[in-house]
Image (cartoon, rainbow, N blue to C red; front, side, top):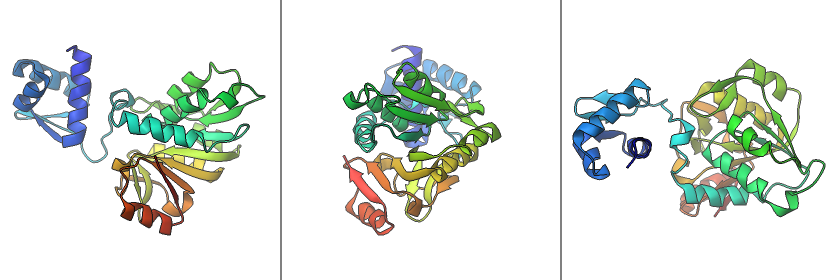
Length: 259
């Protein structure tokens, strides 16, 4: 296993469990304990984890892994969700896409839709995510609008007052939100307050709001609130969502699509 593959696996295990022991990680990855210790030390130098005696833990409640290390988690669910979200968008609409792994899959699903292969434009996409803009910019039928701002390396998102200035001058048909948590009481949320502020602006500029989130993010709360549950029109999630969760969101006026 290459170093990059080990690091990706270690970080994914750490996110799932919150803590990893050296011996435990070495057994799971079938490498020596010395190799894991070096990996933990190097990842700690990059501030991707915190070293402990005999292992490692995540940084804390506001910790967020860089996007490139999260792409494989719940991949099949995210692709199904993305396809369903893309089907909610009509040709010619103006769409806001926040950053994140699920919204990146939404962008890819839009890019391969046959009825969006041509148009003037076929779709207008407004995003603060550099990776999404990069993927869609090669589609000449799409009009891509990128907000200004300062890039966050964790999520490739542009944040700050420069982004605020652009979003204050536009209107959207739909905003698609990638979130780290969505709860009926606490609403949609992100780890970072600057990202949450930009996402909130996208919601305010949109006629309708769609949250794209796998079921592991539902019923949870995170540090920075984006919007109330009542501000969301549709939640697209995976089929593992519980009936109680669907009922609670429906009572809040949110249409739940489980795929």
